[in-house]
Length: 323
Image (cartoon, rainbow, N blue to C red):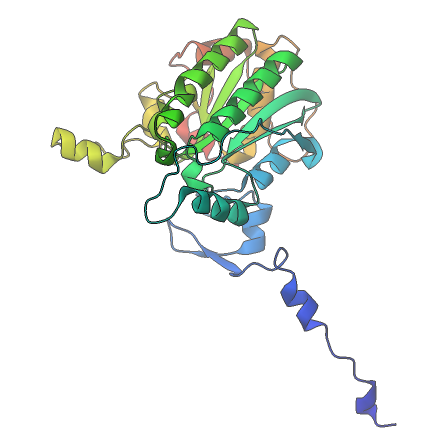
């Protein structure tokens, strides 16, 4: 027998067909420095560029897996809403845009609600997906936020919202705008139940979302470098005919001007929120760290200052970049 008869061909087809395991681009460019970073290194570092600290966008599934203990959580179904109630059409039919976004993201709409444990304590979390039509606030997304708030109120847990949105969903017109007062009422009900509402601003947070529930948190945290505002910077400059300050609408700028309570590195969000939740719900100090993230212990005075919008806060923009 010829030795070549014993040669076993590598299973190249099965490797290439596994789209989930093999991304299209193994290298990702850092938008700030231009450095090329290996895909797996970024994924292992929660999509924060190791050298520059630049916070890249992160998928909701990865966000939730990194936030909950052991990456374990349960997603909640959101009440069904009418699809394409206005029969809207621009260059494409709205219903076709919805189908494309659902295929692209694997999600039904722009908000995912989940429950699980944070440092061994029950917590309710909602994440807005910017890849789903810019995280826009339509009826389904609005109902998702309300579902999260109502779930937190019923289960007596803190509620955490990771915000990323371009604003209202124009394809739903006034029905989209109505989600602003609806979500505001749900926030007030959570507040009446005496439960904390944490808002985490991620890049970008704009439009009607900023003008409603995103600015109603008991404590506002933000990831470094996130853009936060209502209208875009260019629109504002053209309206007032003045040059805006450097860094305008960045999370650091808003922190310095009292709109954001803390700027927190993505690696420290778990421990920071767990500390604050323990203090505000009077359930005690932060449990033992699990080695997954850094400890960020918060004092009662610091939590009170943050909730009241004080100046002497626990996390500065400089400290927020420390890993």
